[in-house]
Structures are given as C-alpha cells and as structure tokens.
Length: 384
Image 1 (cartoon, rainbow, N blue to C red):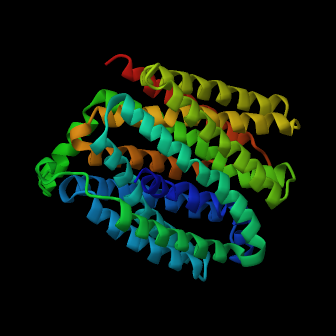
Image 2 (cartoon, helix red, strand yellow):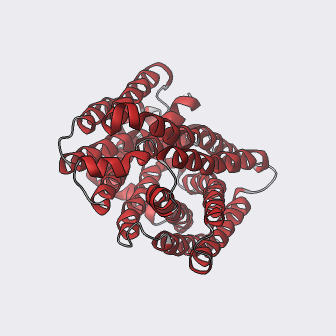
C-alpha cells in the first residue's frame, strides 16, 4: 500500500519534471514566450492546491477510498486533454484540470498515513514515502530528456496518462478504506468550516505547515528556473540537463534515507530545525555565488544539489509534525498543508520568470527569500 500512496504523491514531480526538458521546445511549437510557458507550471500548481483544498475536508466525511478512485479516473481524462491541446491556452486549462484531479491523490495519500500512524512512526513513514517519491524527479527528467526527441512533448503527456492508469489500477487493488465510519465528520458546510477553523487555529500546525510550504517555494524556484538556467545560461544540452536535474533530485532521497535512520533517536523537531537551518545557509550561499562568482557554474550546481537535499530533510518531518497536531482532522489538515504548498509553488514561477532566462539571479533571490521566511515560520512553533 505504501508504494501505491507514494506513486499518488509523486504525481506532482512526475507531471512537472518529465516535461521540463521540453519546455523550450513546447514554447517554440505553440509560439509562446518563456513566461507564458511557465504558466503551465503555475496553473498545474494552482490546480493541485484547489484539488486538495476541496477534497481533503470531503475525505473526512466520505472516507478516503471513493474520492481517491474518482480523482484518479479524472486524472486520466485530463492527461489526454493535455496531449491533444492545440494551443498554449488550451494546454494551460488542461494543466489546471490535471493538477486539480492529481491533488486528490496527493491529499488522500497523506491522510491515509495519518489515519494509521502517529509520532515517530508517522515521521518515518512519511520519510520512506519521500524516498520512494524522490525517485520520480530522478527518473522523470531522464525519461523526458530521452523521449522529447522521439515522441515530442505531446508524447510525454501520453506517457503521463499511462502512469495515471497504473495509479488507478493500484488504488483499486491495494488501497483499503482507512477512515472508519464512526470517525467521519458530517458532510455539511458548517462542519467543514468548523474543521477548517480548528486546523488553522492550531498555531504549531500552522508554523510547521508554513515552514514546509514556503521551503518548498525555494526549491520550486530552482525547479521552474533550472531548464532555462542550465540549458540557456550555462549552455548544457537537454540530455545533460536531465542528468544534472536527476543528480540533484537524488539529494532528496539521500536526505530522506538519513532521516529514517535518525527518527526514533533524534526528535523530529530537532531534525526539522537542522533542515531549515541548512535551507537558509544554502539560500544565502546561492545569492552570494550568483552575484560574486557568476561564471563559476559548478558552484551553482553544487548549491542546487544542497538545496534539494536540505528540503529532503525538512519535508518529511514538517509534514509528520503538522498532521500530528490535527490527527482527528487529518484530511482537512492535509488539504491545508498541500494547498499552501502548491499556492506558493504557483506564485514562484512567474516571479522567477519576470527576470528572464539570461541570469540565475532571479532564481537565487526567490530561493533566499523563501528559505528565510521558512525559518521564521518554524521559529513560531518554538513559542507555542
């Protein structure tokens, strides 16, 4: 079951990273600017946010399995729409729908783990799921780089649709209902609003959630800018970009593995503190590197690896700690966490894109701002 949940949670990196090598080609094919092409990332992230916000509270009422099946069926349909989109405007619309339906799987996968576990066990399972999920940003760009030539960017969306079919079959076969009827909340507007107020009123939950979501914004600044920075600014080919991106993504898996070994011996709060401190350090180092040593490409590549590794240490612990604060409303808590994560992710690409592709400076500026704000959010949890 954990493998299936990880696959559901991997929809975001799969649907983003697999077509990253093809962004410049996609823009040329659909006669769209870099900023417009990056809107396909933004709308996908907004869809992920909306899907989680809608379906998380609903899963607290209807259970986990039925929403999961519905969302995965619709994800298949959205993938087909992306593959046949005749214009950038139509692609942007279907990317939103793809995110909306994919968000259901993401939010319910987290809620299922929260239903079954708590404390150190929860942190360990979230870290294990992250290790499995981290294979997606390793394999996806390599696969995308290999496929962009033979089948083009449309073919990549066909492959993503095939993966959605695999997700659907896995859910039907391996994911049981984990929320007993007696633990469900009535599906009423008043109940949903009450649950939302209770979750947002928990200061520690909010601090952990914002530390995670804003930290993700720093990493997504790198993700959205990297095709242009690495290929156009540094001069690497799409194939070389895919390899470099995959190497950086390995850092998430390494950090997650280290985290699973430490959880139980070191408190998740302390591990999260280390992860956030590393994020801030890397953010400051990155802005210094691009301003004081702009031609030293290897240094920036090393810092990109350190950024993803630091987030790998942060994400599992922040998620477990946040949902541990609201276990009786895990669906709603997971929805708010995921919504904030992907709203931040939706805001970041246009901000980075405003600076153009000629310099990594806009990326570094957004990274350092996000890492500092993530640290501030974490510090609020120490006062409650």
